[in-house]
Length: 246
Image (cartoon, helix red, strand yellow):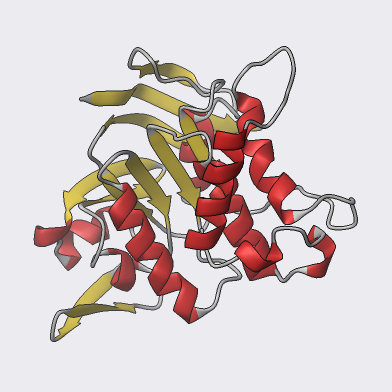
C-alpha cells in the first residue's frame, strides 16, 4: 500500500535549491535508506515529508496517515531537549504520545506497559527514572527512539539514528528496525552505506534530485548519479564502501 507520494517537490533556502523536482513513493512495507553527500538534501527531504519546511509541488498521504496524529514517528538528527530540564527518561518516552490529540494528557496503564517494553528493547529500562541530564548521548538517542515508537506509527523516519550510539547498539538498532519493518514502513537517513545495505530493501540517493535503487543490484555507476562516487566491496556477506575523494 502506498503511504506517501511526493510529486515534483522542490525546496529552496534563500533562493538556493536544496531539492529539485523530487518524485518519490513510500510504501507500507518499505525499509528505505537515504544516502547522499553532505548538503545534498537528505534532511531537507525528510523535513519536507514532515511538513517542517516550505516546498513547492505536492505531497499526498494515504488515508489514516498524518504528520499530526502519531502515525508518523520521527527520530531527528539533533534533538532539542534541554538536558538541564527536570524530566526523566520515561517522561521523554511518554512525550511521544502527545501527538495523539487529547483534551487531557494522561498515561494509561497500557501505555506505561508499552513504554516499559520499548525501554527494555532499547536497553534503557534501568534508566527510566533517571533525569535526562544524567544519561549519555547514546542513551538519550535510545530514549528518543522509544519516543518515536510509542505511538505505534505506520511510518518511522530516522535521520542519522546511529549518531552518538556505540557499535554494539548500532547493530542492535538495525536488527530492531528490521523486526519493526513487519508492521511499519521505515525510512532512514545514513552515511553508512556499507551497513545499511545489509538491512534495507532499497536505497534513495539524494543530491538535489533523487534516484532509487534496490539493494540487490546497486552498482557504482548508479551511485555516481548523485555525484558521490562509491565502490562497494564485499567480504563474505558483509558489504563495505570506499568513498573516493571528491
